[in-house]
Length: 184
Image 1: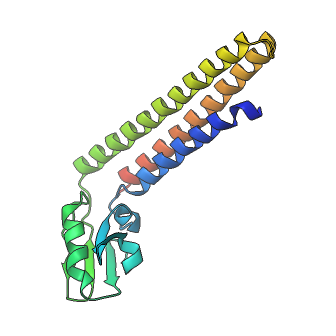
Image 2: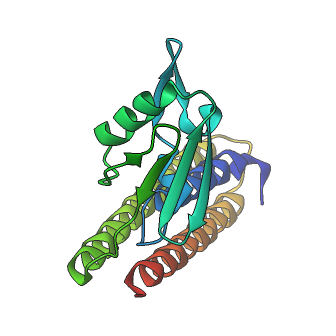
């Protein structure tokens, strides 16, 4: 890969990583502690991730157990979960919060699969926008005197191959997550 294209490859990699992080937060009927990643709890005036103020574990396939380091945080964590878009009501015994994930209905699975596909399509659009930026950069580069038309053409081919490889990675991520969601 030409050094002039590294910046564009890094941007494509970030788009793919972002998609994978979004997919990690989509629950598929099984307990996944990553659904808590974006939640913040007020810890002495500082918004802190739940994982930094509590022990988060998955004792059973459909249960997440949250054990705060300080009992006073139980209410704060519960409030953060209720205000989020997780869609699960927490239950607590004063020391431990439990999130029980219900089995997903067939209809809900299909909705989630559509959401997965949409997020994947959005990531592909981001990749194509990066390709467009790269092509514009190469056209400007070609107008200068320090690079030949053949070199520009080779670089354009490299950008297209890079784009195709990232679109293929996104397609496989979409397929994998859709299969995970639709598997009962």
